[in-house]
Image 1 (cartoon, rainbow, N blue to C red):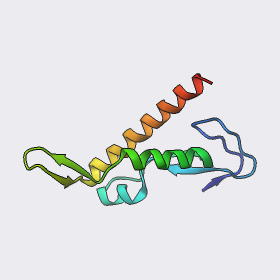
Image 2 (cartoon, one colour):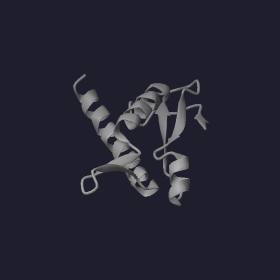
Image 3 (tube, rainbow, N blue to C red):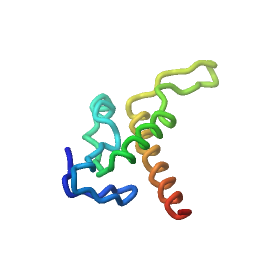
Length: 102
């Protein structure tokens, strides 16, 4: 969904050309697989959207190491959903700190 008069909720960029779109905090496929309701959406500019996607790819994994068996095991869909929410919160905090130093 494109917000033609939107403001990015991360950096504050104001778009009059449709460059701000709604983004799910937790991807729809994750919430569907977890049997959860659709996650909240946030308005993001193209740059913040790309940065958040990269951030999540580095923070959210499909497996977790189990020391007892000394193996990696698949995370549950619920664990992945929590990881995405946590990654978003970390990203938002990082961007807020980054904007204070400018």
